[in-house]
Image (cartoon, rainbow, N blue to C red):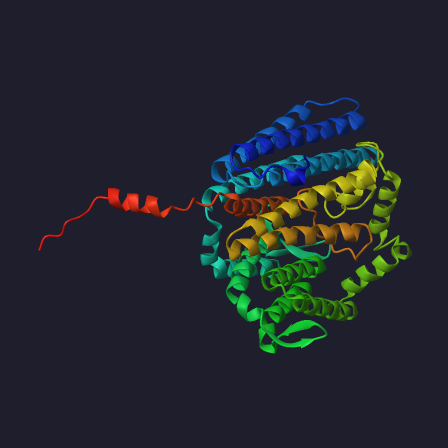
Length: 471
C-alpha cells in the first residue's frame, strides 16, 4: 500500500503508521549524515549519534503532540516533512564541510558551521508546531482574528522597508535584524495573510461568484467585484518596489489568486490574475533594473557566466555532473555554487543525489501537497476547506518557484525551499503551516457524532428529571 493510500481508519491505526514512517525518516536521515561524514572525513564522527538522537527526540515529541491533540489527523504529512527536514540538515552539514575544506586550502579562517544553528531553528519550529496544536483546538475560531491577522501580516511584510529596521542582503530588503540574527518576517506574514484570505473569501464568496456577462464561454465577474484582486495586485507591486524582491511579490499575489479560484471555482479569476501578472511583469522588466537583469540572465545565462549568471551556470554544471544517480553524498563539489545552502540547495541535491534524488524530493513535496488538498476536501466547513487548500497551494507554488528558477524553467527569484534550505524563519513558519494543515485534517477525519434515533430521544426525555412548578 503506497503512502497516498494509507488507511483512513482514524485513531490508533493512523498514529501507528505515522510512528513507523517517522522512524524510517530518522533512519534515512542518519544514514545520509553518516555517509557525508565517512566520505568527507574518512570516518563517522560522534556527531552522527547526536544528530540521529536529536531528530528522534524531536519527531517523537511531534508525534506525541499529534496523538494527543489531533488524533485523527493525516498520518503521512508529518513523516514526509520530517524526512525533508532531515535531508536538509544533512545537505547543510555537507556544505559546511565543503566550506571548511575550501577555507583550509586557501589559508583562510574556517567559517561558522550553519548545521547546528539550523538544528536549533528546527527545535524552535517543532515547539511552535506543538504549541499551535495545543492552543488551536478548533480552526474555525481563527475567523474571529481574521482582520487582526491581516493587520499583523501587513505590518510584518512592510517592516523590512522601515529605515533603520530592515536589512538588505543579496540585493533584497526582506530581513530585520534582531541582535546578531536576521529574521525574515515575510514568512510569518504569509501564514497570517492566508488565514485572513480564507476568512474574507468565505464571507464574500457569493458576491465574488456573481457574473456580469458570459464571453467566449467564460463567466466574467462584475467590475465592482474586482477590488480585492486589484488590492492584492497593488500590494504585490508595492512589495516589489519597496523591498526589491520579485519572489515574495509573485508568491503573495499567486496565493491570493489561487485561493480566490478555490473559493469561487471561476476560471475567469485565474485568467484575470494571469493577465495582471503578465502585464505587471512586462512593466517591471522595463522599469526595474534588477528584474531586467534576472530575466536577461534566465534567457541567456552563459552570456553572463562571469557576472549575474555565474550562480545559475554553476548550478547547471553541478546538476549535470550528478547525472541520473549523482556522485554520492560527500563525493561532489556543491560548494562551488554560491549560496548553495539557501537558494540553490536543489543544485547541491542534484549533484550528489542525481536526478533520482531530486525527483524523490519533489515526490515528498507532492505527497504533502496532495494530502493537504485531501484534508481540504474532507473538511466539513468552508473556512477549513479554503484554509487547507490555500496552505497546500502556497507550498506547491513556493516549490515550483524555487525549483523552476534553479533548473532554468523560469527566472530565478531567490525564494527558499521549504524545510530544506538554510533559514530559521522559513523552518519555523513552515512547521506552523504543517500544524494548521494537521488541525484541519483532524477536523475533517474525525467521525461525525452518531445520530440519535427517535426512540432513543424519547427514552432520554422519559429518563430526564422533571421539575414541578407549584403555583
